[in-house]
Image (cartoon, rainbow, N blue to C red; front, side, top):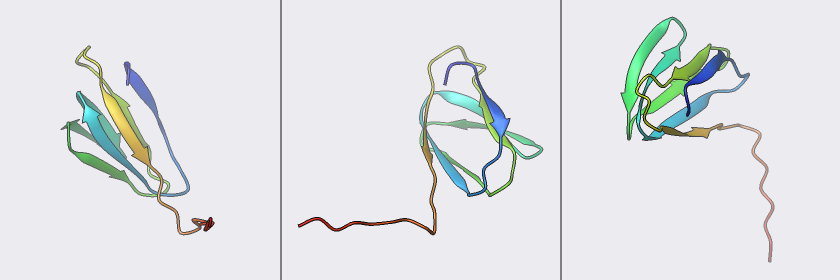
Length: 75
């Protein structure tokens, strides 16, 4: 993350795992400082985003779980 991930919403939940750096996570009306190894869970329809105030690089792994996952078996 270089600077800001603007606040946004999704119709499904999103899990975000901090892989590198430290950021302020915006979750609804809360701002929480998070770092490596921590996970932020944004419920469906809740505004969320990130601000990297440190100037150092940061990386986030975003995971979108869904109840409608399709799976194809291959021989």
